[in-house]
Length: 101
Image 1 (cartoon, rainbow, N blue to C red):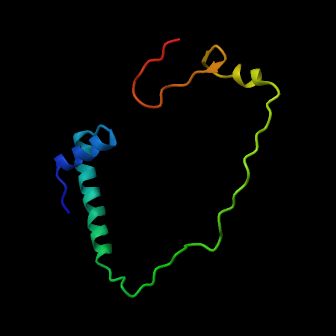
Image 2: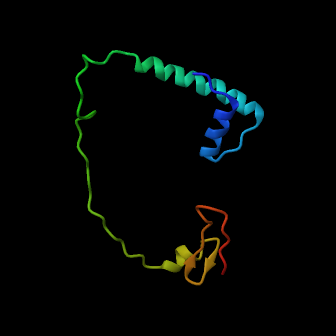
């Protein structure tokens, strides 16, 4: 499957990344090769292969949540780079919003 520059720009936009012209050309070739390989795999006849319900014999290993009491909270909060009162400040995860103090 041959991808053109417009296809790569659309993929880059969806991934929210910026690509140079050289990267667009390189990725167009690489992604085209990957898609060709996927198409080849899809053509394999798997009608005689039985479905496997589990890929491993082990089962989920669960544990109960346990809360530990922290004796000295100041020890952890004093080491944090940015604080607002008793709260630790972190950088925004999404967007470019600025948080006011």
